[in-house]
Length: 397
Image 1 (spheres, rainbow, N blue to C red):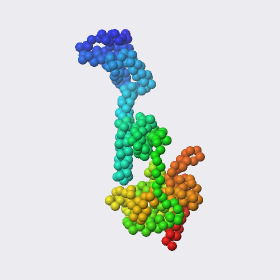
Image 2: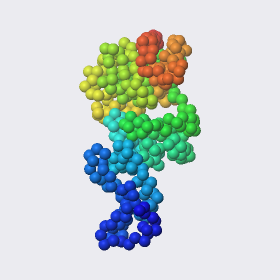
Image 3: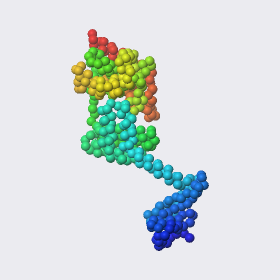
Image 4: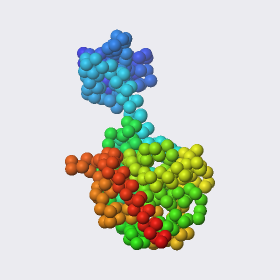
């Protein structure tokens, strides 16, 4: 006879465990201590062994709810699924889901990147992730939505740190991409916030773009009286026009002098990039290799070969040459190349943008791969190096 709520409420604690059956194998187990457990006995679909599934306690789980859970479990068993094993798998997945918080995933990524980055760069990334994004640190990374992330970034903006908000967004995006690659998330909510933040005031890096002034600048760089690694970095900065941090952190393992190519992952977009090396760049690197080639970094720090050249080394050297930050910066070589390659040498803008490692898309809106127009870019880089040589030599006359 099916159970009723009245019968259950009137039932007294037995002297020994007692089953009150409801039908279909569902029963309420009464214990002498007053506890009441909903149970269902079934046979496992694979082994045929008897197993008991707990469906809750009374009165937290009422009769109607117990019957609904029982029905769901029976349907599962009819489909060949062991409801007990299914519950264990769900609990394990739930525990893993909760353990994969944004903070935990960020910490895992930071630990990996700390081996590759300068300590100050690593500390800056850690600050964005652990301070500016602390509010989502304990949230499962897979559950964070774009609105939730935006709310955190709005607080960064509110204190007037618009640039920091953008950098925190970039740091968050890096964590979500890593979470996707490691199977801990399925989407990147940071990607949905493009255009959602305030636009920071534009900061232009000082640059020399007048060919009449580039020659004297190059001559000054070539005449720098300092360490050989700094001299090589100063010479390569205008030839390669990569981001300063990418030049400073260059690794010998990424450079193929025979092929005349430097392949690495860009710091800003984390996409593979190829820098064709003109013969002048190859010669500079060949001269430098006996000095630093036994280590990992092309431009090791003076404090130790396990780290690369510091952030201000090139700018400091340029200040010694008489070029202050209002005249020319290490980043300014990128503006120099973009302007002169386009306006003076007449190379196609998309070739230049590719070489600057900017996102360039095809007519269908898809990003080109790293080898797009590589043959033409090699010609452009050699023409650029030859042009700079001409300006430098003319300035010496």
